[in-house]
Length: 235
Ligand code: CDP
Ligand code: CDP
Image (cartoon, rainbow, N blue to C red; front, side, top):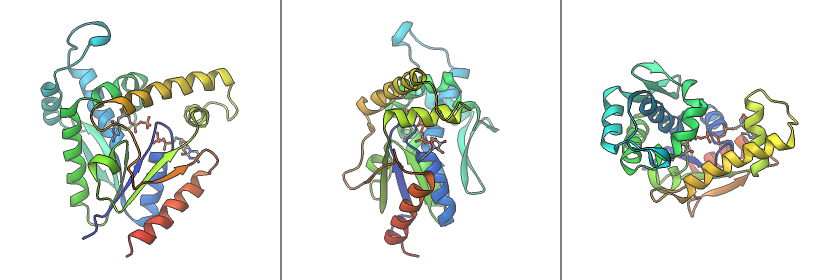
């Protein structure tokens, strides 16, 4: 039986979550943002665990992170076909976007035990959903759902991605080039961390459809993914 899942991967601010959310709505499926779960675990860690060591080598024992995620708990709750991140029963969709979470999330996501825990949550969600789930992240097509019938890898130039992030924060549509350059560097540093880690690095699956969205409108890219989905997942 065909797995009812669409995998959307790509670097930071390439448009994964917006695209996945709109594609899910058009298909009548649910949307799961796996990055939100990594961010929710990171938020829980920052609020509850004391770091070991000092300076750049600081870290948390992997088993403590997983135990914390189980106990609080950190989880995804399905509300109107969107899997929303919760920590200890509180919706954290806003809180996980904070700067302090963004700065530390790649380090937490590089821990194999954390990735295993997050992957179990994702697979449980997908297997229990009655229709299908559009999942976005970094390793969905390569590791979490290698059998997904449709895998999309979104890209966009670093400057375009930086402009999108700045616009999201309420900045001007034509921001200062220095500000764009600074944000592009921040995104590039996270992409580098995500692409060079040992476990499940960010990369396109060999059978992914690569879509460069630098010059695409959101509606256009959503339309292209929906068309591919209708081709590959009839009914
Ligand atoms: O939305 P944005 O591109 O800023 O990032 P995100 O999707 O919220 O993901 C935050 C971080 O979680 C990424 O930088 C990765 O370190 C990690 N992540 C991952 O390792 N694997 C995934 N499938 C999704 C996210
Ligand atoms: O999930 P990811 O970090 O890859 O990106 P996102 O949060 O979905 O998208 C970043 C921003 O780019 C959102 O405000 C989108 O509306 C916007 N955007 C886009 O995704 N695609 C375009 N073609 C134009 C804008």
